[in-house]
Image: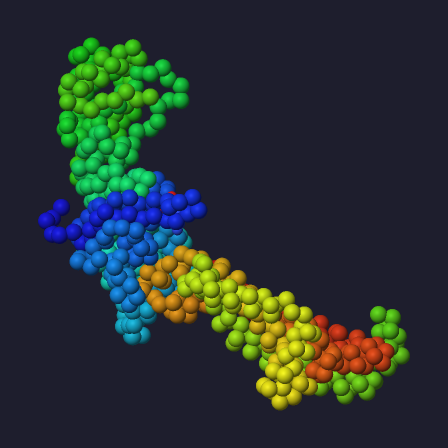
Length: 334
Length: 231
Ligand SMILES: Nc1ncnc2c1ncn2[C@@H]1O[C@H](COP(=O)(O)OP(=O)(O)O)[C@@H](O)[C@H]1O
Ligand SMILES: [Mg+2]
């Protein structure tokens, strides 16, 4: 990544919600930064605190402690008009586009411009530009009910971009879409970053979304940051959870008698991406192995993979030792 | 039914001078009461419903005190029997209209009675607007007023019309009651001629006309509500 200062920097962010059984801690000591012009993924299971994090960023929720620094502005300290003004620096895209059914696609896109006080003429020109940007010029007069899920999400993205925000925040933007539409929307987001230089934050529970578009990623679990960094770095850490999530292997057969060893390829320790080299190593060590499953792909410009090897069940430890000696990161799969 | 067919068979239907003279005026009075009270109810009930919703815990301007205070007044208004309401606000009616008799005077208790009823229906319709839409527009930097004007009311408009239809139909029922105590209209005619003087043809004509008016309101209300629902 470039050395420009980050656009958004969170530090020591904490959020508690009151409940009848004492406070529920939704976020705890979140510290991370997002570079200008990057696409940053925030991943984690449902309930990890992803949506709460986004709501704290935009001042929809006031953090219990910590700072959210957008280009020198501390967002949680803002109120009233200042808060409303800073919100225009964020464009928000939702899982279910949240378009107004009472308005056409064009009028939905015009809404943030109305609120920001643009004149009717300026609005019309900008809406036309945005409809073109998301490829929906011919759908301007359709109401949301007449659009497909993917088209609705495009309108949602155009609406989020209307006032030229610095950051596009997307909360599960593709979770309600099928695989093909998901790819189209992700392609659009990448394209927008190239053309507009906008910074994009995508919240998702789908590893495939991170693989396809993100430059940097943060893994949240139980309200804390487990891992954060460039995709090429996190996939290279064979011991990390993100490596496993982003380079997935199919589950083992339901009934098996052991003898499965998984090895990372192209990770920071070994560097090798050759399945043949690994097989040869084991054969020469006297523990022949077969490939049961393998994943090899290019993520964040780095070729990484994971293979699942089947060996004689009585000799798994021997195989692990051989692989470790060659600076690989094996583990017995169970 | 038997009276009806007998009358029709003897060709005396519509011959009754009451039907020819009093009923047309009564129709006009009933319509006037309903329309004026309906318009006033919409104008005052919508803001009250908005207040009920926005001050509620999930609303855009939560205020437990205001919500409870307004809620209590609305609930009292709704639980008061219409007849009692009408009699108890006679001084207020005199103050506003100058008299407590006639259809103009009946409009006052009709409106006062219908406002809390409609306000609750407005509140329910606003509650059905998804929180996601409100959040989306809040994120655009919208003020509370803009959220109400640009999201809540337009998105709920189909429900607002359906609620107003229900309210207006309830109002038509109340006009008949108001008529019985000096408010004029079809209810008064049905009461004074049909019921008190046993002129059952007058009674039947009045009831049929009320049913026709209610049906027309319902059909138009449904049509408009459906046209406005773009989901
Ligand atoms: N308004 C709220 N009140 C109480 N608890 C909340 C509220 N919002 C979120 N939480 C809790 O915070 C945790 C994180 O929720 P959320 O941010 O929605 O997770 P995610 O988006 O990752 O699924 C959950 O345990 C959730 O129950
Ligand atoms: Mg969520």
